[in-house]
Length: 134
Image (cartoon, rainbow, N blue to C red):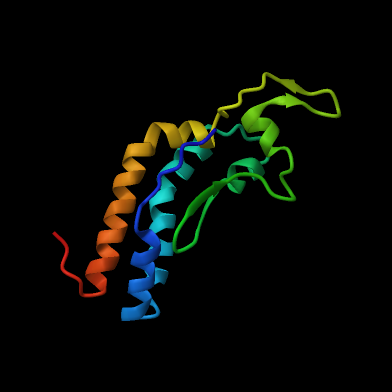
C-alpha cells in the first residue's frame, strides 16, 4: 500500500557514525522528526476536529533509521475510521478509502520534499561527524 522511501547504505552510515561518536546517531532521530513534521502539519490541518484529540494524535515518531507518522491512541481509538472510513459498531458510516484521507494523502503529496529533507539531515549528520561531503 505504502511505497516507503528506502535509503541504501543507511545501516552502515549509522554504524560508522557510532564508531566516530556514540551520540551522533541521535542527531538523525531529531532530524528525521523534523523532516516528518511537514507531513504532520498538513495532515493535522485536514483532520476534522470536535475536541481536538484526533488532530493532536497525529505525530511523527522516529528512530535512527526510520520515520513513522502515526494517528490515534488509546484516547482516540476512532482515528482509523476518520482517516480510512468504514462502519462503526454504533452505526457510523464513512466511505472506505484504502489510501486514507490525511496521513497517506499528505505523504504522497510531499514525498519528494520529504526525501530531500532526509537527504539534508544525513548530510548534516555527516558534517557534524567531521566528514567532508560533496
